[in-house]
Length: 517
Image (cartoon, one colour):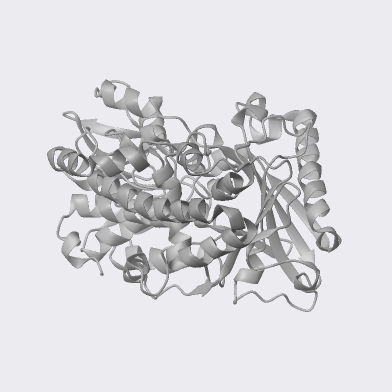
């Protein structure tokens, strides 16, 4: 049982997303007493779940890669958890593309199967499809080499980048669109190659191709999976590892600033005025958010701070959480996801919401992915409609408290909700008739939960500049302060997991010897 009055810890972790939980649990496995602090009311970051009127949704998880039984990430998650998390496979087909007027294109795994899917649709483009498949594999390996440097001493990381400089130049420093343009001039095939970009949040014209290859290739190599019981089960399995080692996890505890003595971080001060000391502090709230909101103004290291602030943020999004009653599989719902681009272009963001229909949407039916879901006698199922958007559409309300945004904001939300639902209905008319509940979240919701700059779902954008930045090291220039989570490695649960584990191992190197696999 943790001591509620304790003010000194071996380590403090700020933010309880996947990276924060992983860092805290890994240090706990090594015998450290860790305090995990979360500003939101629920622990788990964007892996948490919520329930309204009998329907349950995940805040951020739609599917996972790198958690097949043989994957190292799966073994690490099991090691961090009090008991293993169960995952359900989404099957061979995990995504469906609806691009322009073309018939839906179902994408399967592994690499060879997806190449066959594409060749069946584009029989004259076999050479380009083979080149794309090879590029995905090579790009995936290149970004892994760069990611390794995040936890290495600078001189070693520089040498590693030099050794792999040809692959880094070819795959990491070019955008997804640049690689596609080299491979094909068929616009329909190019759209199919790039369509799943929101899995990492980097638009094809801006994102590092290697990052696209890493995330896309993860599904092709390991399949697509969903945690049994939903996203909340991740925190339910990992948090006991922290508390049983004498640590503690607190929600509703916002950190106001880092405490510094002799130019070193020695703890935190909460918004409630509590000062808590620790030998090390790990921030899992995002690199930009760390320097903007946690560092004291006179802490120095301005070059490092300026570089982090110069990195662009990823896109924002709207989510329409819908509740169905009835036999949704009979009328078109699937375990696999649906990517919808009505105009045919895929490098698109909803910049004028709600005045026009969303140019891109993602539709997911979490209840069908979860073998633990019990629909009950009324056959309740949950689904989600996501549209990636620009922060500018909500910016005028950003500085207002939720209750002070006025009738124009409520009208704006209603119009966004209607626009999303009308487009969903155009693709799934019979499913739309079974919807009995709708609830919209906006980029302001994301910022309220995560604190991310301009509601960026994935934090810092996945550009080549972000991938090559030396500012995103786990060990910061500020003694006693470490970064964890997806900003230091890659977006998504696996990237955040590695970011957390490597942060813990940077503090206590003996953890490197105990990591599974």
